[in-house]
Amino acid sequence: MNLLYVDFINILNMRKILFALIIISALFSCKKVVSRTMDVPPDDSSSEYYANDITAIPIYSKCTNYNNNLSEIASDVTFILLEANPPINEFHICNIEFTDEFLFLSEMNRIMQFDKNGKYIKNIGRVGMGPEEFINIIAPLQIDRINNLIYVNDINRQRMMAYHFDGKLKKTFSFKGVAYKLLNPSKIAAFQSTFDREMADCPLISFLDSDGEVRKTYLSHNYPIAKEKKEHFGIEINPLWNNRKDFYYLEFGADTIFRISGDSLIPARVLTGDLKMGIEEHYRINTGSKLSVSAYIQRPNSGIFESDRYLIFRLSNDYERFFMIYDKNNKQLYRTFYKNAKEVGRGKEKAMTYFTDDIVSGLSFDPQYQSEGKAVAIIPAWEICEKKQEILDFINKNPNHNQSKHLKSVVQKMTDDDNPLLMIVSFK
Image (cartoon, rainbow, N blue to C red; front, side):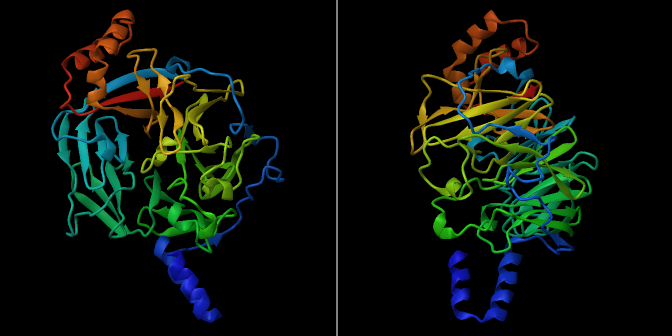
């Protein structure tokens, strides 16, 4: 994409350059732009926009206040074993969403519907080139709980598809973006992904109606960034999460967390600290002890979690990966730390991005998904079987939680051939 853009610069006159930029932008933008605006405040912690009501959170700081216990942040822990058929590979799961009655799980080319206890009901849609089929739905599915609709983005065919819970396709519309979030039944947020960040006219976020018409687009103050300055892609999709009815948005590499209000972005928090990186530093391989927000590949909702009391950030540097927890009540920070943490990745960073379930199971809790205010981790069957006696011993010593009896029964029966166990946590 960038090589094509450079060739245009070298051989076309100014009129053709403008035309080329419009074409390139259209490849990665949403349908029809009704209005475009740049009235988002610059991402600058010294800006006049950061008045006294903007919360500064120094997560990019050295912290030695350690606490790994899930009981510190969790109000409830539950477990759901997914029925053994059809078999599921936990590495292929793109998203998990809950409703009052159902559990929906999506992979790149499959949408599965379960009841709330993990019993398989049916697949919704199927792979193919037909009018009701999809090719690649790697972007996380979204749920309209009012109208019982499931939205999926077929990236290969550049269209959004909405299925009813009964499996029938209700509507489709053109959608050339990658990342999106259903904010309510009548509004979709389409937001910046790694493909956009070299664009001359890089979008920050767009707001669309439920038929795909763009109502408003904000442009980025921080991008584009030149390809030659990037040693890697960074987070593939910007974090966009919610707490109750409020939605929040953070551009990768930037410091301002915006609250979405209608079609507006309102600065709500600024992330600070001595170990903060600049935009270009986020794309370098070696940055030492400097910190950045991170997320799992293809799991954009795994970077930031929020509840009424806590903000939980997944952070990393060249040496370690861990969670930083901000207590909104007392404005204090603490983090996860394990002295004997395993080394992972090419850089052999110490993996500390998990909490220890000291409530029900004794297992590690590394949330990778979130839905309806709950964080979700996937525990593979092989891990349950490997730690079976440890889990049972923990339950026998802590038998009074309402999930203890249920989990004990599940663990005793599990084999390596079972589907994974979902661990679901409600934060305080």
